[in-house]
Structure formats: C-alpha cells, structure tokens
Amino acid sequence: MLNKVGYIFNGRLKQISRFSVVGVINTLIDFVMFTLFNSVIGVGYSISQVIGYGSGVINSFIFNKKWTFSDKAGKKKLHKELIRFVFINVITLLVTLVSMNLFVKGLGINVYVAKILVTLIAQAINFLGYKILVFS
Image (cartoon, rainbow, N blue to C red; front, side, top):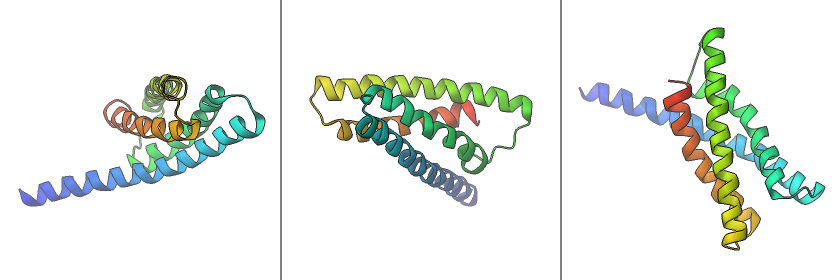
C-alpha cells in the first residue's frame, strides 16, 4: 500500500515539476512578447496580454502534451484535446484580462506587477483544466 502511495505521489510530483518547467518557459515567452508589444511597440496592455499569452499557449500545448502529461493520443483524440485546450486557454485569457484591468485600473497596481499576479492565476487555472479536461 505504501509503495502505491509513494508511486502516485512521485508521479504527481514529477508531473507538477514538469508543468512548472513548461510554465516558466511559457511565462518567459509571454513576458517577452507582452513587454515588446506594450513598451516597445506601444499597443497597450490588453492587446499585449492577448499577444503574449497567445504566444505562450502555442509552446504550452506542445510541451504539456508530449512531456508533462506524456500524452500519445491518436489524431482523432488530438483534435478533441486541441479544442479543449483552446477552450481552457480562452477562459484563462478572459480571466487574466478582467483581472489585469481590475488590478491596473481598479486598484492602481503597476501593469507589470499586475502581469505577475495574473500569470499566477493563469497557472492555477491551466494546470487544473489541462489535468481534468484536456490530457486526462
């Protein structure tokens, strides 16, 4: 019994660790794109959030599917996963946009501090969504 509990715990820890590594890479991609579009190009934080988040999402699907959740689904399942993945990320993007607006305009928080806060919120939503709905 203890062996099984240890195996499950180690498997979950490995999965969470891999998700975290992929998340860091996604976050770096997101922040670079966000900063580029917000500060350099000057399109504003809402559009920059969509561009940055979307850039990280592409990386996320590939690495979470293959490495974090070790999913080897066929093409038919791939389409279902991709639809669910996009659904989760659209929900997450909407939550981050509303949250960022609340933090920046409502609470007067610096846009980059708000970006960090919404990134943490997005990580929690995405892990649960991917685990339960996408790569289950």
